[in-house]
Image (tube, rainbow, N blue to C red; front, side):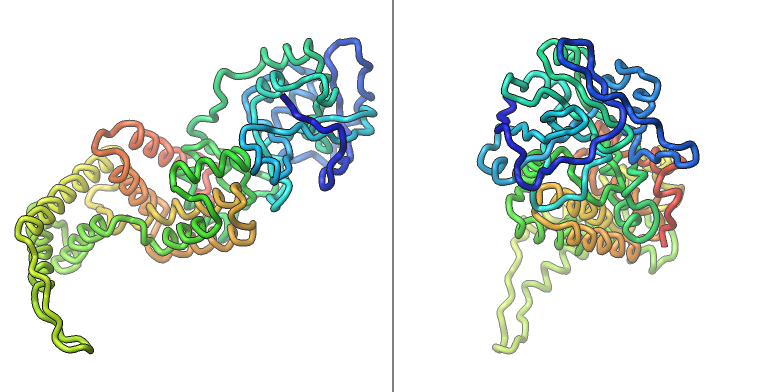
Length: 443
């Protein structure tokens, strides 16, 4: 149920309502008539395609289409942070008085018109169908959608009206693999946009606005759950530590980097393609040489320190593991060339992109969970973008390295969904005319 408290809470004061209110037929009085459309000389720029679709449907008077747009997108409502922290399975319907309807409304916002994240209030998201089912007789008599914007509308909330809402709700709200951008209030050019674009493979995969620095994600509580489930992050300190490790490329596997470093050195020494058998043989020799050096005595400030003799079976296992890893990398790169991720003759030099791309995402995820501030998020995005530029030469090179890291971590040479989705995202970002990778120079 909505769990409304009947009053206007502090920090949730009445907004300035205007626009075209709409109420389906019913026994309650209709809302005031709409104001005239904006002058022709001052066209409205919708923040995202969602608000544009709502505005277009409203302008046509096509309320069925308006509800269809609401039904396939998440709707956000403001919440007291302390309440969500202590009631993890509840959402309050906090009313706001609207002079447009002369009474209390529950305000819901679409993604593009959410305000910049602050410590409190926070936001919860749900489907239109969920709102319809959660309402009870003590909750506000009106639903206000995007009040104060040209896409706004007001709807009565009687059981009959809410039954109509449910008919327009998609079975599953999932944007799919799409390039989505915030056209008003989002970074489109410059260093912040570059840093955000380093996380665009993640954004496209998740159907999120790639350039929304003021990130809310699926809402405060769901972003906290996601960080706990996927990263075991539950505190601001853990978020900052993880973010610093990602920006410093300390989370990418050192074994992966060891194997690639061997090939990179061979390519510099011999100035050409490194044969697979040669790469494997040199990598195994380095593993064994390192083990032998570890067994030798060392001179330190405290005198002579005995070495640690290596167990032959352990060294052999390490060498065999590196040889298998090199084979996996070579097979992935062959597939990458066949699919256009790598050009013929190119190879991946380092997998640090796997950390930099995730750092760009992590910076925003922490903001959505309120583990950090907007200023911290912007600073981290800039650092991630700077580290990526310093270690790669193009978006395509960065992308191939990121995808290889993702595949080595998740795909296990199945070439299944983990690889297929990443490839699809790469193709979107390298072909869509609106892609940041085609509009933001790498350096």
